[in-house]
Amino acid sequence: MSSPDKLRRDADRGARAAALLENELLKESFEKIEAGIIEVWRNDSDSEDVQRREDAWRSLKLLDALKQSLKHVVTTGEFSAKELLTTQKGD
Image (cartoon, rainbow, N blue to C red; front, side, top):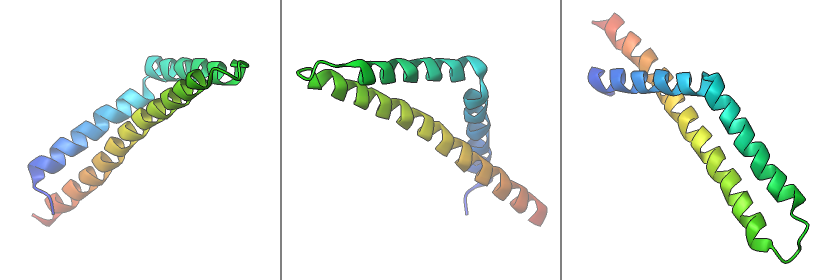
């Protein structure tokens, strides 16, 4: 079981991460970046330019990793908030 301070900190971080993921400007930015990367990846017809396609693929994976990291913080925060409520009810 975690300390109440850590639970509060994790719950707060989760709420802030959720706010980021729900932010229209950030969502629009992610979508535009992803679309640009996919466009480069799809339209690179030069069979010699393997490096450019690999860079695009890596960029796409990094963007996905960023989103997944934020989602993980949200999930951890939700669990922490629930655990905090449970421990407070038990006091």
